[in-house]
Amino acid sequence: MTVLLPGVALSDHSFTVPLDHADPDGRTIEVFAREAVDPARRGDDLPWLLFLQGGPGGKSPRPTSADGWLGHALRTHRVLLLDQRGTGRSTPVTARTPDLAGELHHFRADAIVADAELIRRRLTDRPWDTLGQSYGGFLTLTYLSQAPEGLRTCYITGGLPGLDATADDVYARTYPRVLDKCRRYLARFPADAAKIEAIADQLRTHDVCLPDGDRLTVRRFQTLGMMLGTGEGAQRLHWLIDEGLTDDFLHQVMTETSFAGNPLYAVLHESIYAQGAATNWSAARLLPPELADDAAPLLFTGEMIYPWMFDDIRALRPLKPAADQLATSAAWPSLYDQDRLAANEIPVFAAVYHDDMYVDAALSLETARRVGNVRTWVTNEWEHDGVRVSGGQVLARLMDMASGRI
Image 1 (cartoon, rainbow, N blue to C red):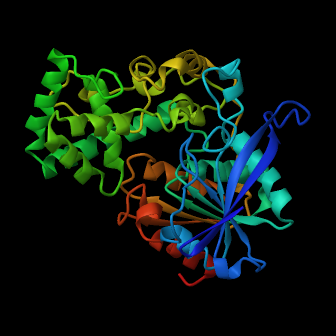
Image 2: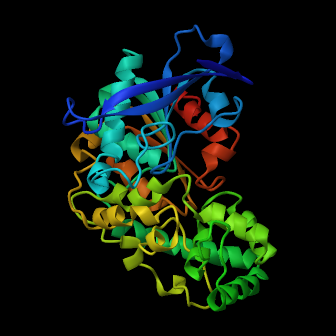
């Protein structure tokens, strides 16, 4: 079935893939993808662009029109919006899944890339281009490690991972960036410090419940710092704090912190860095004292997942046993073939955001130096969400680099 929206024709696809690609005759799951094309070019033989969504555990965008990066891509490409395994309309993963932790070992970058390459071969006999946002950049380097023959050109926005960085390495680099973002936020909105303390005092002395029944604790309140990693995040957080403990405030906090729409993000988050060793709840172990829930002034945390979340948050409680097993598991294969990446010949064009709170720019640039044929654009004009909010400018810049115009 094809749906026509302003400037874009959308068609649904479903692909049967092995749960474990090492056992192609074993259990299968469905992976959903949505094809997007300019309605005037539906019959044209266009190159494919695979969009690799950020996450982990995030479904692909649901377009309402051909705007932003998608509109720019549709000028030259047929785009595939992939619901990575376990997300969106792909076969769901729930707490009722038998041996959930064992199954989730098959939901990392290596399996997603194997899905993508199987799907590519069913759609086209030619290599395709990829656009990897955030975690999608991690997927891109795994793709270049596993199946570079399936790739023509790769675009990465805010997602060059450390090739051998552990979770501890990542948080040792990103926690200082979180502290810096918090301090910049309070310097910009100094009156918010007293409002934050007043809210925290209420949460410490009273049982304040969110609309879904979860208690709002100080440590859950602190996780609103995730917002500070986006372009307008500081402004959004300011106006939320300005509300005080109103019903609207509580509803917004529930929406921002519930993980109801992407529980896999929480349960898989640290494992995306694991290669041959357990993470052992790295973010909790490395939490700086300045970010404790009794610190003064009270500051916000960032893109970190903590074991207490699986006790305090309704959508995550059923996943607690699996999350604990994944945190202590060392059965994680390598995601990157460093020799193959060093010899890479597929052109890669990567936007590195200088002030990125989620992905350390210095680590990204180190990776760019270690992978062959990578060209970077370092910018402080955009934050981590630049490809989404720039109106297509970020992707246009990378495509101009690929065409030789820049």
